[in-house]
Image (cartoon, rainbow, N blue to C red):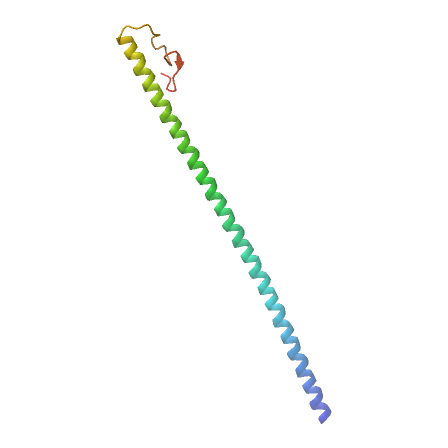
Length: 110
């Protein structure tokens, strides 16, 4: 009888040990999955930050192009005014040829 009880306790301890090992394996799998998810989230955040930086660079390029267009228009207007006033005063100056202002190419071809 004692032998049977001892064997029963031994089987019980073995069963508990296997259950503990199984729970530990499951926890390790969960931790691994959590690490992978965190790595993926981190990578996604970094990609999103890079896309945002690229959008900001594109907006800056667009602002620079707009500034260039405005500069070109101001120069064109100033050159045209200078030329018109020269002509009005009867000073020698090349009349505007097609697509030219003051002998230089207009940023706004006619």
